[in-house]
Image (cartoon, rainbow, N blue to C red; front, side, top):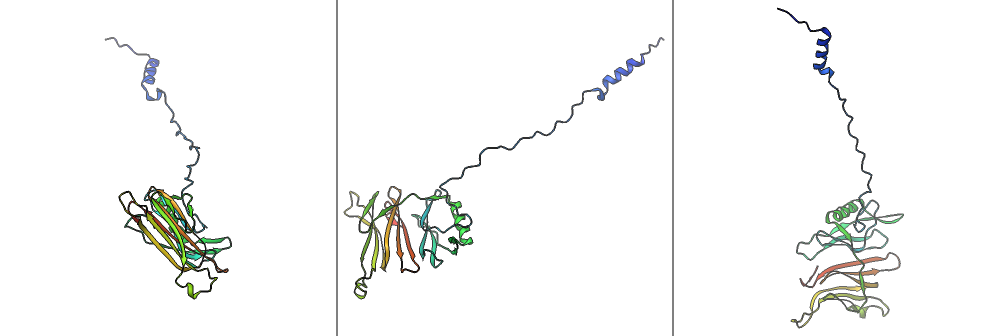
Length: 250
């Protein structure tokens, strides 16, 4: 039998061709680097009401919730420039489910009054949770000058107090009354009184009433009475949310 020998260099080439080491080796690619997006920061809503550190206390009605429609008001009787008196946050809304008033504390600083840190955090949390935004500009209602706003008539009256006979003739003390009624409809004989609120025997300096129309037939009413004895002026603030359709003021 004849044996045919394969040349050695042919065998080596064959082995080299089958060897994995002879195949092209791809090196591992480095991780893909994605640079951070350099877009503009998310814009904040300029109407959003927030209370950052060192915030000053609000006065009267200052915000409305885009989630519930509640109106936030800081009311009570308190010093204009001092910590004295009583301040509370009221959330006004036309509902039987009314949130209780929340006491608000302040402290005096070299730059004026500032919110107590606990009160500030409470206010800020409520504003964020309810998505509160600033209210629009109110309309002033002069004394003894009834004004109508979308089916609701509002009036601020000043009358002699029952104590007039006991007071000096030049004493500027009187009763101050807020009167609100829903204008009569075609089928009704007369207007429906929604609110009568009286401050008795007060010495208000330039008492004022202001109104904001929130919806047709829904108005926000604020009464301000400034008490000034020349030493420590105070504010006496009240507010109501009136709805002619529901025939109520809250």
